[in-house]
Length: 298
Length: 265
Image 1 (cartoon, rainbow over the protein chains, first blue to last red):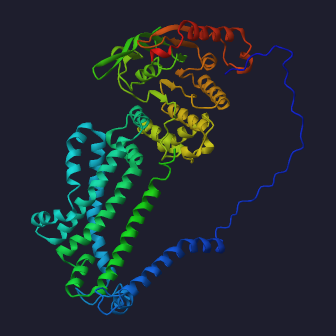
Image 2: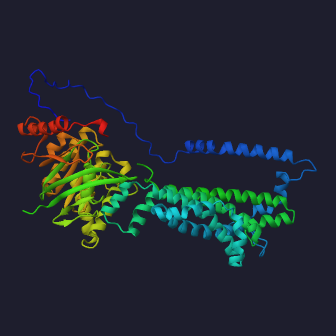
Image 3: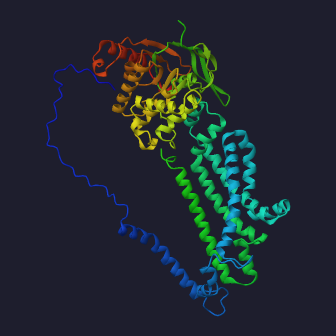
């Protein structure tokens, strides 16, 4: 639109009548970082509902398992018999008698190696599949079939290949968690806007620069979705794998407790596994949120 | 004189599923150094395709794009593009977006301090130095486009290609940016090709206006020289005879002789 030349004398702009300026009071933004009352109320609203639910569950459980011929121990009995495990997660009385936190850490160490490898290899393969049509046509069907194989089905084969339980367990984690990483990375790479590719082409970025500077940051939200699913799966897999391979991890502890009929110990171990899995998930989500800040907003 | 940029009998057709659609046919145009040329036409006439051909983002089917007598067949920083939707990388700050370009283009020839000065000079040129640490999501559409222009200029291109750079902006912001582009063009004398569908914008900014016929097989219908002195001021031009005559000529071309036919789509 253009500003037309207005020669017509009838059309005339009148200056707007002067109005007394209004004073608008700005409410100063509250600068105080710590407002005890509001923090307390936020905490309460976040904590009270789950605490109430857990309390109700414990009560129901206690009532349901109180009869003398109940097959599972009630929470009171768990507390009494497994008090050592609950109160002292870090005790160390020799090779097979250690606190549950140590066992969780040993399992986590395996997960760290297996999942770390899966993340690196998964992102690289996912980038290849997302970038190249031929790689996708060739590899995608293979991935789609392999990813449906349950984690433990890999275990006998990996025991045969590695002839040792520890690398076998790590391999099971690797092979379980790599598929969501590959598939999500590939989708992310395929969804990189054409404009970003054009920017890269005009700047003549080479393959490596494109991978580091455009592809990984642009696909980061997808990559982290894959990593988050992957870490959840690897935590599932490690417990199952350790039950079969032995060692000192949390999985084997459960199997051992079952063989010596220590049901309260199993229940405590389950709580440890659940809390750890939850923390892992939140950790990856938090790292993802930090790394991809700004990427998702357009 | 040798032409700076020469479009030599360019044809472009796309093949899709056995069907070949001819988009551009026999495009011939020469552009001198320092010239500001607009390409105008109805939507779907292939003007963006033409810009992509010059940028090297798409390859010609026949003919050639010659820049300083050398054939262009791949994209490069000497033909920087300002995209319609800015295409800034959202995970980088304003400064880092330009740094990406400057490090790549001048990584070997300029020292780190020189590169920093160069980034800041280009940000100053578009008056965006104050927002250097902001991310694209935190600045307005007009500001993003300014940064996009700064990024293109920072490559020190031989030709600046603007692909409907102001299309997504409101009228007032667009006017500001047009003034900014005129100012930069007069200061740097950069050879510029701009795609637009805005008649006033084309007349205001250009030395010559290239008018495209409707597709399929669109070609250059007419080229209009705009004999207005620079610097140009939009208020004065609003009643300027030459301006109005040029404007009328473009309008006539677009709405009388080459009316947009919906059915042709």
